[in-house]
Image (cartoon, rainbow, N blue to C red; front, side, top):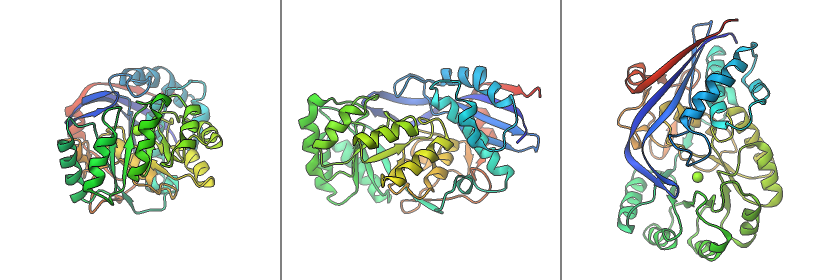
Length: 371
Ligand code: MG
C-alpha cells in the first residue's frame, strides 16, 4: 500500500441525549477522524474513540491527536506496508495509547479492504451478513424513567438490554426491570464502581438472571475479579481491564471473567481485536463488541468486527439515530427487528458524508508523505 496523505480532523458533535455512567455524563463528543489516502486515489477512514476527558481511560481526543500526529504517522510513513497486521509491530515502540493506535490502524484497514475490493468484514475474516444489536441505557434519575426507556427499546426489537449501575442504583432498579420484563436478555455494566467490600450487593444480583455483570471492580484489576467470579454465579465480563491479547490470556488463566467485551479502540485496533477474538474462541469464551458513543464511521468498524464468528453475544452498536441528529455516513446505520444488516460495498461499506464531516470539523491538518 502506498499511503501518500493523511488528514486529521477534530470533530465535535452534540449527542441527542446526555449519557450517564458511574464515571460521569457526556452531552457532546469531541473526537479525531482519520483519513488515510493512497496513490490509488482511495481513502480509508476511522474514528478515535477517546473523549474530551480521561474518564474512561487515560486517553483524550487531544492526546490522541498528539500521539497520532507526532509519533504514529511518522512510523506509518517510514516504509510501505503490505498488510495492516504489520502495524502492531510497527507501532510497538509507542507504549499504550491504544485508542490513538486503533484510529490510524483502522483507517489503514479500511483502505486495505477498498484496495483489495472487499468489505472490511471479509478482510477481517467475518462470516455473518447481519449482526444482533443490544442497547446500552445510561443511569436514569428514577425507576420510572428507566422502565420507560427499557419498554421503548424492547418494542423496537433490541436483542438485549444493558443497564448502567453504581452502588445505590443497582439491585432495586434491575429487579424492577426484571419484574416487568421476565425474559428479556439483560445485563449490567458497573464501569468499575464497586470493590470487594460491596461483594454482598453484587452477589444479590445473582437472582436476577443477568447475562453478565460488566467490569464491576477496578479498571486495572484482574486479581480481585477472579476472587469475585469464584463467588458469583453471574458471569463477569471484563471491559476496562483488557488492552491486549496477553491481558486476556492472564484473565482466562486466573478465572477473572467468563466473557470479554472487545472495544477496538481500547485494545489498539482491529488486528489486536482479531487476536483476542481467536484466543477467546479457543477457550470457549464468548465475546461481544462494546460501544464508545461512536459516530457513523466508528460504528461501521464495530459492525465489521462483530461479523467474526465468536462474537456470539449482542453488542452495543445501535442505530445512528439513537445517538445523533445527523450522522457522518450515508446511509446512516439502521436497526431492523434487532439486527443491523451489513452494507454492500468495499471497506466499511458506508460512504463518509463530507458535508456533515465539514460541518462538524473544528480543526484539520494535512500530512503529506515525503517518500
Ligand atoms: Mg463497559
